[in-house]
Image (cartoon, rainbow, N blue to C red; front, side, top):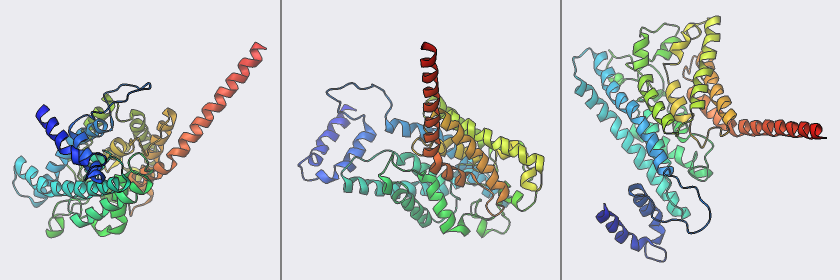
Length: 385
C-alpha cells in the first residue's frame, strides 16, 4: 500500500495550488480520499477524534444495500424464467438479472458522478461521497426494463435540481433517489406503471403479466402469493424492494453500526401497522381488506423506510421528531395506497412529503422542549423563593 500511496503523491503534484491542473484538484482528490484516509490533520483547537467520516458512512450504507441488491438480481431472472414456464438454474436467473441491472448501476454512477465532479470543479470544492449511496439506490427503485437513457435523465434531474441546486451534499431538502424516481414516474408514466414493467422483458412476451400485488389489489382482486413469498421476495416489483427479509438484514447493519435511525424505521412500521389495522376494520375494498401484516411486506414500504426515510440530511434530526417523522411516513404510505387506486404505492410520495416537513417537525419539538424547561425553571424559582 505504501507504493500506491507514494505513487498517488507523485501524481498529485500537478494538481496542487498554483500548479497547471489546480482547477482539476477536486476530481483527483476524490480518487485519493476514496482509496486512503485524508493525510491532513488539524494543528490547533479541540476536536473529537472518530474513525467515522462521510466516506465510511456512505460505504456502510452501500454494504447494507448489497443483500437486497443481490437478491434483486436473482429475482429479476427468477420472475422472467418462472413466468415463461421454462426450466432454469440459479445461475441462469442470476446471470439474466445481472445483464439487466449492472448496466443500470453503471449508468447511474457514470452520469451522477460526472455531474458531481463538474460542479465540484466549477465551485472549487472537494467532491463529496454522498452519491455513493444515491447511485446505488436509484437503479434499485426503478423497473428493470426502463430504458437507460430515461434512467440517465432521471439521475441528472435528481442530482442537478434536487441536490446541486441547494448546494450539494448535506444541503438538499429532498431525498435525491426518490426525486429521481418521482421524475421518472411523472415524465415517463408508461415505463413506470402497469402490469408489464415489473418483470424483465414482459412487454415482449404475452405470457408474462408481471402485475404487482398492490396492482392486483387496486384492480379489486386478491393476490395469490402466500405470506412467505411476500416476505422472502419472490414476487414482481422494483429491483431492490421485493425482499423484506434481505431489507431487514440491511436494516440490522445500519442499526448496529449506528448509521441508520432505528426510531425512524420503527416509527414507519408502527404508523403503517396502525393505518393497516384501521382500514382492516373498515374493509370497504380489496386494499382495505388486505391484512395489515401483509401491507408491511409488499411494495416499497420496507425499502423506503429503511434506506431512504433514514437519510440523515432530509430526515428529522431530533429524537422525538424522528418518531413523529417515521410514524407519519408509515401512515401516509398506507393512506395513499388505499385512497389512490391509480397509484397503489405510496411510500415515495409519503417520504418526499415528510422531507419537506422535517424541519417544521424539529422546530416544534425544540420549541416544546424550550417551553417545558422554562416552566421547570419558573417552578424551581417559586419553590426557592
